[in-house]
Amino acid sequence: MSFGDPNNPYGQQPQAPQGPYGQQPPVPPQGGQPGYGYPQGAPQQPQQPYGYPQQGQVPPQGQPGYGGYPQQPAAPYGQPGMPGMGMPMGYASWGARVGALLVDGLIIAAVPIILYIIAAVMAASSVSSVTPDYSHCPTGDYTCIQNAANSAVSNSTPVGAIIMMALAWLIMVGGSFFLIAKEGATGQTPGKKALGIKVIKETTGQPMGFGMTFVRYLCRYLNGLLCGIGWLWPLWDEKNQTFADKIVGTVVVQVPK
Image 1: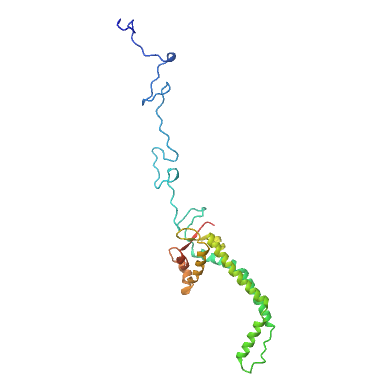
Image 2: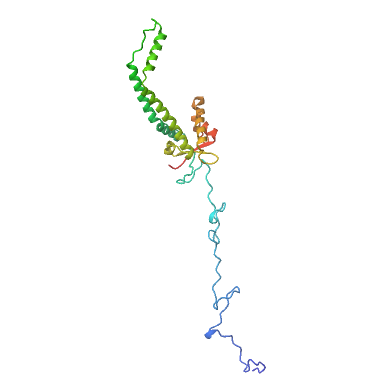
């Protein structure tokens, strides 16, 4: 018994303080952070920000893109791209280029060919009914006879045939400018679109516009030099280019139809 402690006059052993309603006092959680009177569980791992790799996950290699993950590098021109996204899938083959050229030629030449045939039939029927006047030609003067025949043919050509031929020529020129405008704006003529190919500027990957497309069409005449070797050059060229393509810096690529 101890009578010296005024707070414990009966010498009782001190007891642990009781919690409310006789409960044991709460044990503070580990780490020194108090709870709300009850022990908390093990501390949770902080939540990772959206788009970043979780703990223990190895991020993919490459440059980071949106969400912390790398974007796939864009395929260069002439290399395989993503089907359905309008990306180039490789250089166009020589056969596809020839096929597109034939389709475009048929589109702009079909009507003029018909008009030229009609004009030829009209001229032939008119000439067959004309008799040249050889009365002023001396006997044996074949030059005079030939001139008289040519004069009779030229004078007998009906006006309708001349109009048909002029109209056919205008349609050919107008159709050519239509193809140039379409290719300059979109990189595709009707024939190229049907064959799934496209003309683009090699440095930008975009259509060339009307002016450069017109220059490219003029440079096509260089393909016919040396027995047309420029037209055959894509068969062994690394980028399947003709002489005209190399001059203006264009490539023809495959795209989804």
